[in-house]
Length: 159
Length: 159
Image (cartoon, rainbow over all chains, first blue to last red; front, top):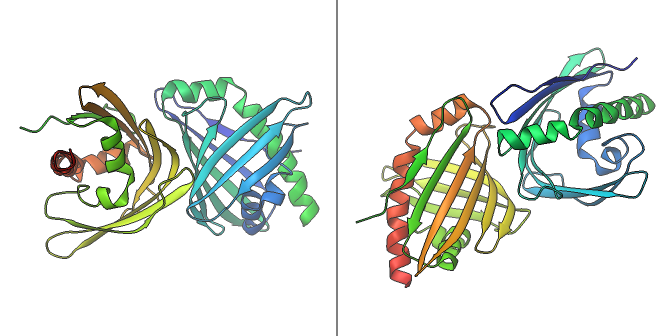
């Protein structure tokens, strides 16, 4: 059975907090978020394909990727990597190109729980409360849940 | 007499909004925010010197600069440029290295008012409400006010 995604969307502020545990060492969880060949195997909803034309995952680098749904519709995302600290922290910007200039800032914390377990703790900070609410209404939670189920499988395969 | 800086620090949310008008065309105001040789002549409090070891002001680029106060104390800042749209918009991350991981996201809008006047509209979005409050308590407003007085002089000189 897959682990629960805990999502907290407090009223009146522009952020979403989330946590998710994984049955994998923190180094494997970090690699799955920073190596494009791994990211493209799990990020996004079930049935989507992902292309990664740009992925320079270092402090001061940038990325761009495109999700394609089963009907062939494309959804492009881009951002910069402000901080990339091995097995600890990624701070990155995030923009869905379909909602131009609604840039978010994401903090992804990686924590070792011992016994080959680890925890991901995230904050996604939007430009406005309304923009944050639109992201949530647009199916953010189910897309994340789908992605993490795929990530569980990827991590199990690599153990 | 210099124009007023309007700063809005609403309770309970992690952002600061500000606006400032300038007696200069929008292209000159934009250049003064994106060309390192110009930025270093006005950004920061009175009496500070500024060095800019890194400045790649393009979409996906990065920057780092160091302010030195009259006693020789150094204050370093770094970030990435998420969006750089000529005479319109800059979206960048911002971190004071003395407060590690308290990364902010800044939106700087540039607007032509005609008659050689322009308006800067900014939102600085912090990771937490408490971090935003610390920035304000740390003298953010007086540093900004000082900088914009220097910017007025720089823009007047270049007319």
